[in-house]
Length: 351
Ligand SMILES: *[C@@H]1O[C@H](CO)[C@@H](O)[C@H](O)[C@H]1NC(C)=O
Ligand SMILES: *[C@@H]1O[C@H](CO)[C@@H](O)[C@H](O)[C@H]1NC(C)=O
Ligand SMILES: *[C@@H]1O[C@H](CO)[C@@H](O)[C@H](O)[C@H]1NC(C)=O
Ligand SMILES: *[C@@H]1O[C@H](CO)[C@@H](O)[C@H](O)[C@H]1NC(C)=O
Image (cartoon, rainbow, N blue to C red; front, side, top):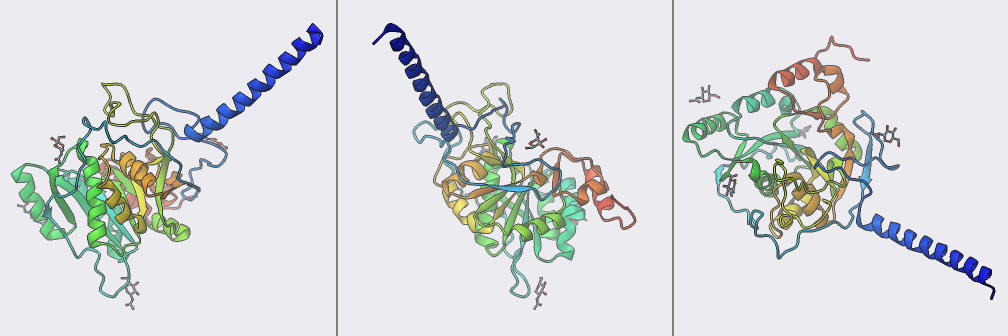
């Protein structure tokens, strides 16, 4: 064989090997990782060919369960301990989901709120969640922990006697304990609201257009799913000064599993008892949305149905915007009142 032929053959050989390795690498990469990241949690939303961003509330895509990094069982000392959720009820309502005739509740709205936010509960009852008064197939409950303040507790119990919509468990109500609060929803729904078709978990600074949400749920009729604003490829924050700092031993993996923004998401009721069960079998992870809609959801092989209508952004607080939306985040109480008034203003015409 001549030197030239050998050299040519060698070049071709190297090139082919390179192609094979590159392809294998890409395939592996796609299987294990998602292609792009931002350093912060909650900040990255993948925009591939299967998803499309629109401001409409009905653009959706179903995301199949993928294998996701799971916390290891041997390195969990630093994160909150495995939480067998056995906090006694300080305030319990058992009859919220009972209906006069045997019609099932369609949607139960569970607002996660701190005990001290009296005014928030008042405004939520009066505005967007008041739809329960006209639509008997929706129910409203507030989920909270222990304020460890006798005055607040006394006021809360008084409030509860008036409205009968407060569920309170005896764990310390704090930001670090938000996952416990979400598990409290799963537990309460599993025991006292089994027949509801859907459960909306929502934060107290969200505005939700319940009518639109109900329409979307009726249209989609999803099962075995979490419906919300999909976040893909978020990574544990390694900056110690961050609110979301997550040490390596709290989450063992580079990327969180797909999850829905915790500001508002809907669970189809078939997965609620399963999520509750699995939440008792694995260590509690303190970021509630990642824990419930990411880690626990992956374990029970439920899907995410993405809907950009559940944005955690802040759409302009006015009636015309909200007639077309499901929700928005970070509204003041004045803004909630304003949106509610305008959404229901018969004279207000929108394009
Ligand atoms: C996402 O992709 C669609 C088309 O695939 C494009 O119209 C849209 O502007 C993109 N959105 C963002 C935020 O990049
Ligand atoms: C039962 O209640 C639901 C809502 O509460 C109502 O829509 C339905 O018409 C009722 N059915 C009967 C037979 O009363
Ligand atoms: C108890 O609740 C009622 C109705 O919500 C309210 O009018 C009253 O001021 C409350 N009392 C106290 C002591 O908070
Ligand atoms: C809740 O959070 C507080 C402080 O953030 C913490 O001291 C407490 O142990 C946590 N857990 C429970 C079950 O209250």
